[in-house]
Amino acid sequence: MRVFLAWHNTFYNKKRTLAAIAGITFSILLMFMEIGFLDTIRRAASLIYNNMDFDLIMVSHDYEYMNESGRFARGHLVQAGVTPGVDKIMPMDMAIGQWEDIDTEIQSSLMILGMEEDPAFVKNLWIRDNLPFISQTRSVMLDTLSHPVYGPLVKGREAKVNGVDVKTTSLFSLGMGFYADGAVIVSNQTFAALSRGDGSKIKYGLIKAEIGEDLSALKTRLRSDSSSHVKIFERQEMIHMEEDYFVTVMPIGIMVSTGVFISFLVGAVILFQVLSTEITNRLTEFATLKAAGFTPGYIYGTGFQQAVLFAALSYLPALVLTCLLFQIIHRFTRLPILMTLDLAGTVFVLSFLMCLISGFLALRKVKKADPAELFHK
Image 1 (cartoon, rainbow, N blue to C red):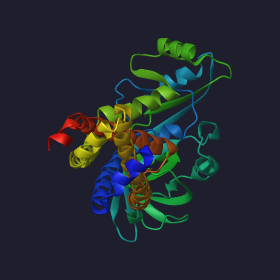
Image 2 (spheres, rainbow, N blue to C red):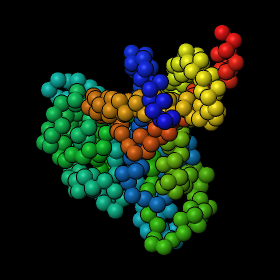
Image 3 (cartoon, one colour):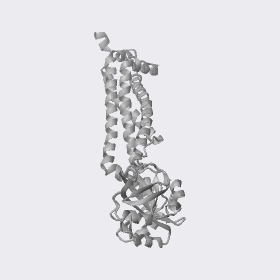
Image 4 (cartoon, one colour):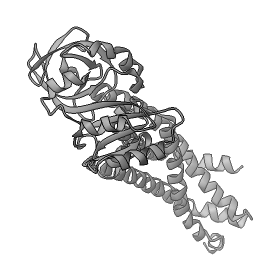
């Protein structure tokens, strides 16, 4: 009975209902987009770390985030390599440079990753299998998710990196569009030639512990043995730190987080106005229900069910539209933006919370539905 009444009230005026659903769908779509972008920021910020296999990482004391990481002497990593409990070490470097298409002479920003050809430190199977192909001087592994302005993303093509001739000998797929238009992986020897930096200093030192080693104890031991010029972090600690920096410190993370709140507020205001108008127009009917002996729980429950109906009918089209928009955004930006169960579940909960809050505020008007007014008129 109650569900039927809520359904009838919702669709009594179909035009007004469709307009309300459209408005709420828009606000839920905004929440999907904002939270989706927030997830993308987190995913992009830690993309490299998530594709590498290490237990501990050594970075400069000046490290803030990947693009502002500072450099430290390679000797500190070599010293860590002889520490009891350490199995392997690998220096890894990163720099932002310029990619130039030889045919078009168009230059684009480029992330250059330098690493040793040790598959033990690589989780990404595509990168691991192609490591032997970067051993040749000035050979690069090119990211297939680089911007189309790079030209053909195929093996065998030649280009210039920071004015140096290079040849694409292999491919991988990662998508570093958050930092640059594209990315290449090279050997540390080639990296020194392309970046023209100080080869005695590096940005990252990846460390693998011996099997069964206590990572916390090893980290403490390495910190005590190392100088104050470096820091040591566990893998997950580093990933969380990088993600949190982008979300809580970088302007883009703060803006997107604010956008989530604003989109939630917009949807709540729209639904409050819809329900408030609906209840105002039906105060006489609510008074009739009271006069007929229906309990306040029944009456309020009907209003809340109507709010839930609006949430359900708005969530599904917003979900479909978001999936389509994510595909379009990924295609043109190459950012790792995608629909996940966590994202769908989070927005689902927020949508119903939004509707329940709006319903609670709007239903306060039901108190004004006085049965005595029916006979007073």
